[in-house]
Amino acid sequence: MVDRDGFLFLAKAGADFVKIGIGGGSICITRETKGIGRGQATAVIEVAKARDEYFEQTGIYIPICSDGGIVHDYHITLALAMGADFVMLGRYFARFDESPTNRLRINGSYVKEYWGEGSNRARNWQRYDLGGAQKLSFEEGVDSYVPYAGPLADGVQTTLYKVRSTMCNCGALSIHELQQKARLTVVSSTSIVEGGSHDVILKNSPNN
Image (cartoon, rainbow, N blue to C red; front, side, top):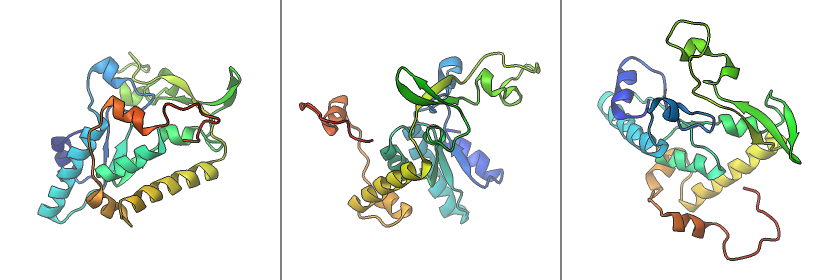
């Protein structure tokens, strides 16, 4: 679900929470194969507005989950600032020791296996295939690797430090307050380059 109408349909049907995202996941190719979906930020902002209006009209608050598009830690904070109550973190958790997939060494680096729910490897034909055969007619996900990130506890703690630090920068003590105080702006590709290290020779790569 990626828009206002979809949210209202699910809300009126009695949904306990609503998940936002079609095709934004790192292992999802739904947009490429079927041509449906929407930019994750646009979808979250529109649905969050619909959720707030629905709450004002009915007194019923339906949490929304942003599913897809999380690559760096700060993307979590951005999704929360845009209105999400919580986020889906498939790729994030797949990187750690505790994920059930195999750890492999490829080209000198450790990686973990990670595959999409709509891939042949997932064998989830009941959800994705509409033809009735016990197979996928085509794939909507890929079979891939993600960089190995060590123990879960260390990674999660670092992520939480970053989220809390950004909230502090915005003068927010809660997610709701972050949503009220955060200011979102569209940036250029030049601004993105400017926002990282540039025009220097790095001694060591920072841990992002």
